[in-house]
Length: 302
Picture 1 (cartoon, one colour):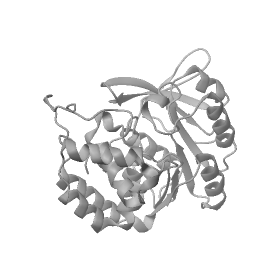
Picture 2 (cartoon, one colour):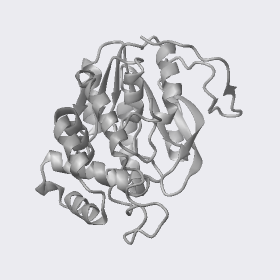
Picture 3 (tube, rainbow, N blue to C red):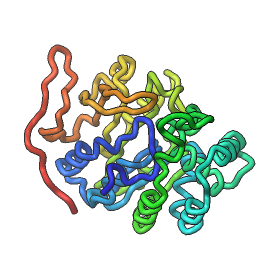
Picture 4 (cartoon, rainbow, N blue to C red):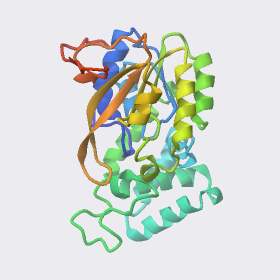
């Protein structure tokens, strides 16, 4: 399988922690169950779990119509979308055309908006659709050109593979809080949430939809009321640690490529009754000392 099964590049994407989340799924006997992401974004983690048979069905939600339209299009207009990829030239003129669609999204249907999101995601720096420029610059004088992340065959192969499992993928375009409350009531007992809200510190520079401090507080109250098991990933901000101070919290390292490549320290927060296996290379956040968990991982697939 490719590094990520998602056709999208996504700032802060969590496909890299698939090993960690799959181990948690196994340790809590959730394999073969349902899995929900209120902030689906690039969907790389959810798709990895689905395609590797850890999870039987996934529920993907994104309030941003630009992102939702992409997923809706590849699941429901697959052949048309693939044909659009094959026949579209990857040029600066086309980039301007697709950017215009994003800037006037209310004037375009879901398919055109979804393809625009895909095109800009593959041609903009770090995959940031609106708040970043085109790779190589408008004059294309860099050693990296706008098509350097637009491998048509590879992207089409990913879309075809996802489409083969579309009966196991449920897509939503809801506010994250409404989604959590609704899905928490209807998912089977053998289910979990993996929640990845917009970053606290850098959210405004990365996402079209981002939260202010009050929004993060409101979301925390909703998460703490979830009846199913849940895990939560965040940037390691003191404000977030305070909101979830009564929960299990761990730090881990994640390669992060938006704007410039670096390794950041992220937070993993979990419901208190969830089992966290050894072997995850994560450090528990405690008052006086951090304890590192490094042992052998369990193996399980359905």
